[in-house]
Image (cartoon, rainbow, N blue to C red):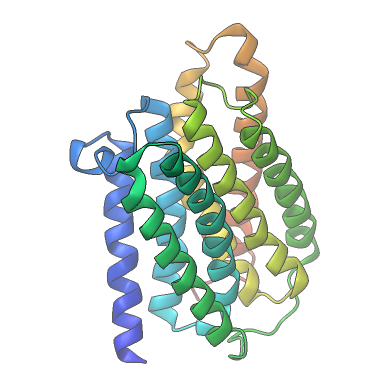
Length: 254
């Protein structure tokens, strides 16, 4: 298990570095995206990668391998949906996307293998998930499914104009994230909630300040989108901070 632990920790650290690169629009990071995009889209990608790294680092640090199925299912859904769209574009003549098709396929295979391997492992903490967290997971799942579906339809749900191709990939990410929370609802044990809350908190921390600053420049027709987005960030951040760090029975330190 030591090799696996170091692999997950190193992988989580590299993903965090890539996420910071996207958040700060560093060329080595943004060059890995399949097409040119805008500042806020890169920031969004940075927040997603920060969320992934938070869960990976927690699992690797604690050795909570029984919590891997939820994250593996998340990556599997994203890989299948995004990879399918990359394959569609490849068939339409965009040969430069072959690498992304291959990477998506490999990610799908790896995540499927991780899911099948880890789903029989015991959870380190079998206590029931607190009721407020369960309610919050239902809210998050609903929001992710609705937003992800709207993005797949290329509807203007973000508080900025999104590249049409990126909209499909972002929608795939949101739908994959929905499965992350669905698994936590299906098996409502505290170990199946920690990674989700850590991920949402990392996502919130990357976005919250830039999104508050956006209130001064956002287009009037996109202001409601921004207000709803910020409200979700504040609520999810508050839930994560309370249960992970303040609520004595569930806090992860001490």
